[in-house]
Length: 500
Image (tube, rainbow, N blue to C red; front, top):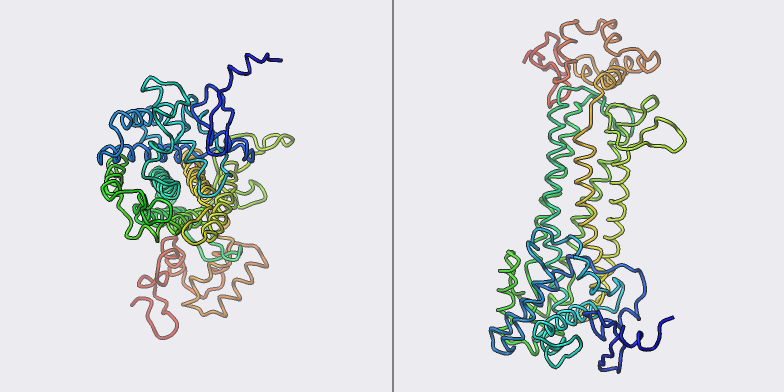
């Protein structure tokens, strides 16, 4: 058990508007953060590193803008800026979502689930920057006569404008990191589309045999699906460029000069490299979470598309003896603790789980966005937590899917052909020549016998062998138009000419 002297040495006493608070001596945070630690022992989860970095950037830009206007003494502003740079570190733009170094992470301690609007998060950043700035100026932590968390670090600000501004910057950086991962996955599917383009297989609708398709067409379609998702997510950036910084508490801009407002927006644009701009109406944008609903909507569509693709890959690889087994996924780990040699579609199963989590995030964001009242949405902490983690896990899942699954997929061409020629749906290609009912009878015969539909068609004598060969060519059956048109002697029913 520690003695009294040791206990005193481990803590310092700070005071806020509610009274005295005991704070760990080595903490850069102060009284209000400590209260939050005690009030919200909820999840053990902390703010996403991107949100911390974005908040520090906002504070850095605010110090610059307040120095520009002359409201903040230059030596205090410079100390705050230096403290912010220490937290950000070198090349922070290239690793915005990476974990903070342990030396800094231990000072950002507020739980994700906290008081509304992010006040505790904002004060955590204010106190950390203030105490580090105090040290830079030669003082001791907690001596807020040198640098005040509220009067200096938070000058001309409110949580209600700094937090949503940090939300937008963090989301923009996460989108910037996610888009290349999407492009990487799209390219992986497109490459397989080219590799597999010559392989004919059975198409399936309603999980029943359908007309033929090329395996490459399926994979190329997956690539295009991701391309469309890229375009959708890219468009969401435009609305995030609009900032409500300078609106302070309710969007009116009380305590924030015009020079400061324009200056902080300019500094943030220069620091981030994004074309940030002042909102058309600071009152309108402050409570509206529409921008984040749009981002979440794009990730919802992405997660939905990825779920469908992952499900397809699991089906196509099912077996090997009792399933489709038209493709072979890379073996990345043993699949069973009891069945020797079993290999599971582990990567795509992981992708499914990530997508389901992202869809859950979207639901939370939707509820949070509609829960704001009047001039503020107090659900901002949970909204941005879900936005950032949705992007984060989808980004990482797509990189793994591309590198550890899609790029190593092999086609089982023999199996594809075997199932394709057993499918009665191939008679669809000859229906324009012999009619629907005769084609249906041939299909029924194939289903009953299980024989190769090509043999049944040849035995029927309904088409010359050379015409049948043209009609049943893979490329003829898997492109727009009537298979064999212009290359057969047999006329198309309805008065047209196959030789056209």
